[in-house]
Image (cartoon, rainbow, N blue to C red; front, side, top):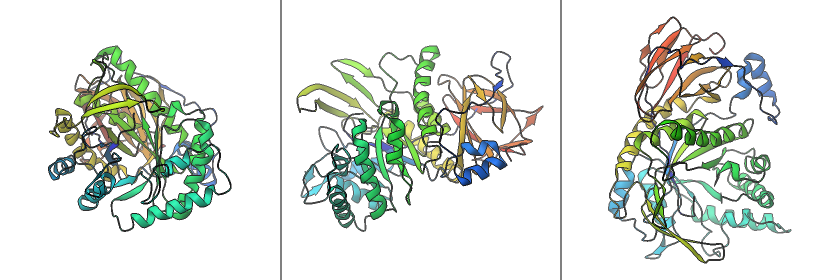
Length: 475
C-alpha cells in the first residue's frame, strides 16, 4: 500500500450445506505446536489445565468489529463535499483512516474528517503532527528514529500531550496511527518508546500501525515493541493484495493466490498469541493501472466477501477496505523523484459516484453489523482448514475447499466460523461435528444434525458463524 489513506472493514455471513462426498472428505491431523510459541502465563496455564485448546485462545475478545476504509478523499483532487460525506456515511462503516495533507479554508483535511466522524458516530485514528509543530513531528517520524538520544522520551511525551489537547472532546478520536510499513529493525526501539509513552499518557486509546507481516525484518521483535501491556489493546493492520491483473476468477490458479493471502493471515494470528493486542485485515477492493497495464484487477463481490471471511477465520477484529476513492497517484521515490503514475478505482469513481464494489461492500457491511454483536464477546481459539484439518473440539470431518475459525469463551471452543473458498459457486457442504446440536449464531436457526453431520448452505465466497452445542470437550 502506498502512502494514501485507509478505509475499514467489511465482511459477510453466508452459508451452504450438503452431505459429505467421498473425494472431499478430510481426516483430522493432530495439531502441531508452533516453534517459538509464547510462554504460557498463569491464566493460560489454568485454562490449559481445563481444556488443552484454551492455550491457543486470544488474550482479548474480538470486540466490536471495526469496519473501515483508507479514504484518501479523491487522491490527486481532494474532494470531501457534503454529498461525498453522505455517500460515505451510507456505506455502513464505523471507522475511516488517513487523509491527505491539505488545508481548505483554514481547516486541515484531517480536521474535516474528524468533524465528519464526530457528527456521524464514526471513529478515526489521528496521524499528523500537533498544531504548531513541524511536518516531521508526526508520531510516526519519532517511531522511525534509529538514534533516540537522551531527550527522546520527553520530546515524544510533549507531542502526545499537544495532540491530546488539540483533539480534546473529539468523540470520533479512535487512537494514534504511529506506523506505516516501517519494516527495518533499527526502528523497533523507537516504536517501543512511542507506544510506551502513549500507554502512560493516553491508555484509553490504542496505537495502530500498518504493514505486511512477512516484510518485517524481525517479526517477534516488532511484536514485542508494539504489543505492550496497556489499557487498550494496540492494533496491527495487515495489508496484502493478491488479485493481480492476470489472476483467474476460478479454479486452481485463484486458489493458489488465496492460499498465499491466507499464509499472511496465518502468520499474524500466532504472533498475537499471548500478547495484548488485536489485528485488522486491510482488504483489496481497488483496481490499479500502472504504465497502461492492469497491475491489480478489481476483486468480485464474492472475492471481497472471501477476503473478509478468511481474515475473520484467523481472528481479525476489523476489516479495512483499500481503497475508497478513485484517482491518480504520482508515486515518488524517497528522494522525491517521480517514478510512476498509478490510476486507482476504488469504491467510488473519480467523480465520487458509487461503483458496483460500493454496493457489494454496503451489503457485506450489513451482514457484518449483524455478526458483530455475537462475535464481539468471543475469543479466538485458532483456525484450521480442510487441506489439513487439525485437532479441535468442534469438528471431525468436512467437505473440501473450506476454512474454519474456532471461537469460544477463552476456556472452551463453542463457535465455528465456516468459510467457502469457492468464489464461483454456492454450495451446500457437510460438516461432521462433535456436538449434539448446531445453530446459526446470528439468525438463531437450529440446524438438523443427522448421524453426526450437519448440512450448511454457503454463498459463493461466503461464511457463517455456527454455535456447536454439547461438544464433548468444547462445551
